[in-house]
Image 1 (cartoon, rainbow, N blue to C red):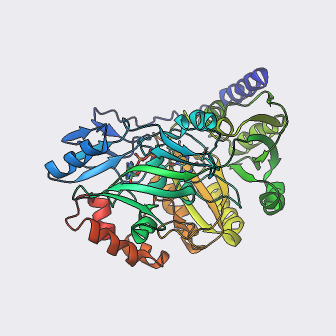
Image 2: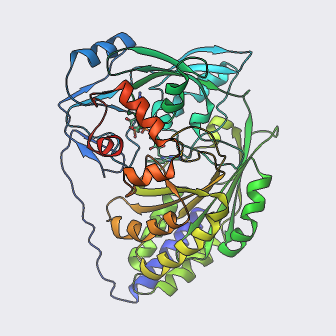
Image 3: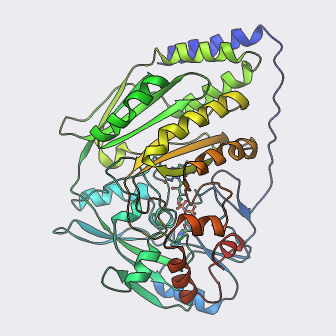
Length: 453
Ligand SMILES: Cc1cc2nc3c(=O)[nH]c(=O)nc-3n(C[C@H](O)[C@H](O)[C@H](O)COP(=O)(O)OP(=O)(O)OC[C@H]3O[C@@H](n4cnc5c(N)ncnc54)[C@H](O)[C@@H]3O)c2cc1C
């Protein structure tokens, strides 16, 4: 694999030397800032940053302070959910499994726990998360707040796994919420953008530990379009990526297996992103040559198989930073929308090199879940974090909206309160619960104020 990559980079360098390529100056903005999100697109200057170690400390913090309070997880959202110049509250010191029920396969977990810290102790307790997203750096509460999801036509987003939760509200009250207790608040709180209060504990419905076989196959885009619906139906987890200006992509499936642990040589996706960037930078003078070189290379990449414990086999390392827009569309619209996006992208945005990600998510009945009452396809577009994403996202967003998409709460979009009210049948019910729990708007930053008041 290494020598093939070496061959690819040499080929790009030789081809680039044939022309005087324009130098690309990337605007790198470096500022000292107290808080910023993973991609650097959101930032703020909070007066105070607090990390309570107990519910009592959190209650005291809420009742003894004035001003806006914003809960923060691990800062992996792209949308302006977190920023405040008042008080940021992190539950990073409230982490770990509190208790577990072996008969029901349920576990109560502190809301500040990062997903990557859940797998091992949960396995020791005889349980495993039913689904996970494509990284495991997020906090559990952060995943609830934005309806974080993995992929699989039969698998819901993370909040669908929630059996109960504990919420500390604006007046310092601690509410236990489930279908039986505070049931309206429970429906609202499962996906609530951190706007109802601070979630401190979550009880999840899990499964017994399981092993997953992950199979990655490189294919031509037209073939992917042909097989996607069938593969989504016949595999537990299915997703695919399309790489702009190559006509190529790859499919990824995960299925439960009892086969022994195994792994083939794996292409590092961070190296892959860097190679795509290199090709973009050095071959900007000839998109046709860029396409020939990249697609020829991709056709030589071997299939990959990884068999591992489930919690080690969902997530990837994402070290090449980007900004992202992702919309959730009715399943029947997904592939049509993708074809249109590809056309616009390849007609007008030759500078884009990040793959488009396409996933499937099962519908649910959570009030502010983007998967509310519909089977869903998710389409995500990305731009390198140092480059302006706006023109590209502005061109793609109308396509996603035309096909009735709902944006991922944690990712970039241009929708306002009226748009969301049209997209979410339970929007007003949510607003009522929110108003009742937080009449003074202590949990609202400017973005959330514009949505909910
Ligand atoms: C590289 C990368 C990969 C990603 N992959 C996926 C993916 O595969 N699938 C997917 O769906 N999304 C994905 N995301 C998006 C990410 O999962 C969500 O944005 C998620 O909400 C981030 O969690 P966090 O802990 O970083 O929360 P933050 O971004 O810090 O906060 C998100 C929200 O959670 C709220 N919150 C945090 N803690 C609490 C609390 N204790 N109580 C109440 N509210 C709280 C915040 O107020 C905010 O509204 C990805 C993001 C990145 C950067």
